[in-house]
Amino acid sequence: MHSGMTSVKAALLTFAMLSALAVGGLGIYAADAASGHNAVDGYGVTTALD
Image 1: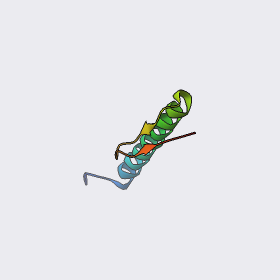
Image 2: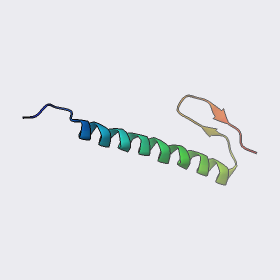
Image 3: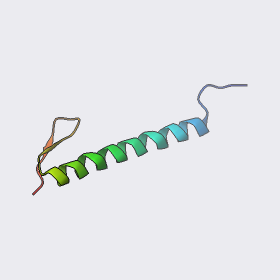
């Protein structure tokens, strides 16, 4: 009996999505800190780091 989306599948997908967001965010800020330019996130907000 398959009910489509099980709670285990939902939990794994949620964990994968949050992990991807965390890694992507860290990658953006790490690249910005290394190169010294303004980082731009997906919402069009620029972050100036000194």
